[in-house]
Image (tube, rainbow, N blue to C red):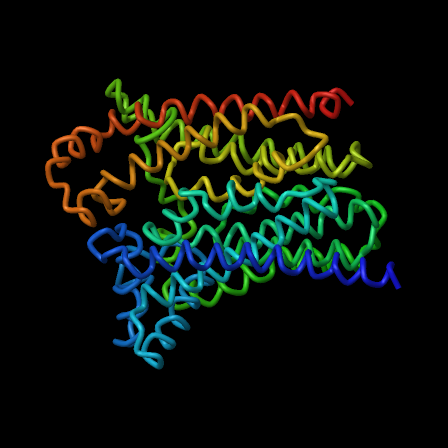
Length: 420
C-alpha cells in the first residue's frame, strides 16, 4: 500500500511541477501580449500583417512583398493564423504570439524530457523557471521581435531527441523520425541543413531502403515545398529564397570590415565562408559515417551545438533572433551533469540578457520598448548613437567574445573525438 501511495505522490509531483511551469510561462508571456503596445513591435512582427493582406488580395507574398525569403512553412502558418484572426476577431499579432507560446511550452517539455532521459540531469524544475521561462531573451524575441525561430528550435529539439534515442537504441524508427524532424526544420528555415551530416552517424547498420526513406524524409519536404513556389515564380524565388539574403555589417567579422571601411570585402568573405562551410559539412559527414561509430549523448549534444553556433558567430550575416538556433541546446549542455560548462554558461547568459535588453529597449527596428512603451523620449539621443553600424558591432563585442569561448570550449570537449 505504501508503495502505491508513493507512486501516486511521485506521479502527481511530476505532473504538478510541469503544470506550475506552464502557468508561469503563460502568465509571463500573457502580460507582455496584453500590455506591450504595437508601437513597441519590432519591424519583423509588423510585417506579418502586410504579408497576411496579400492572402486577402489574392497576391503571392513572395512577389508582392520583400518580407518572405524562406521556404513556405511560415507563410502557411501566417495564412492559418490570419484565418483564425478573422474567425475569432482577434488581432493577427495576438494569434501569432499565442502560437509562439504553444511552441515554447512544447520546447520546454522537450528540454525536460531530453535532460532527464539522456543527460541524467536530475531535478531541474527551478532551473527551467529561471533560465528558460523567465529568460528575457525568449520573451523579447517571441513577443516583441516576433520572428519564428522558436519554431525552428522546436524541430531541432525533436531531431536531437530522436537522434539521441537512436544513439542509445539503434532503432530504425528513431532514426527515421530524426530525418523527418530535420526535414521539417529545413522546410521552416534553411539553416538546420548544417545538421544533415548527423544523419550519416551510425547508418552503416541500416539497409539501403531505410536510408533512401530517410533521405526522402530529410530533404523531401523542402524539395516539394520549394518546387511549388518555384514553379509559380522561378526568378523571384531564386533571388529571394535560394540565393543568400544576408544582413551584414552589424556583428563579428562583417561588422569589423564595415567599421574599417572595407565593406567591399564582405561579399568575398561570405563566399569564402560558404565554401569552407560546405567543405566542412562534407568532411564531417564522411567522418561520422566511416570513423565515428559511437559517441556519448553528452558529446553528441556539444557537436550539434557547434554546428548551429558557427553560422551566426563566424558567418557574415547576423540577426539577434539567430541566438534561438542554439540557445536551447546550450541550456541542455548546462543541465548536463557530465559537461562542465556552468561558469562559462552563466557569464554568457548574463551578458546575452544585458545585450538584448539594451538592443530591444533602444533600437527602433527592434521596437525600442523603453522609448515607445514607457514614452522615455529623452533616450532618443542614446538610441541614435547606439544604432549606428559601428556602435552595434561594439555593443555586441562581449557577446561575440564569449561565443568564441563557447566554440573553443566545445572543440576542447570534443578533442578526443577529433584525434581519432
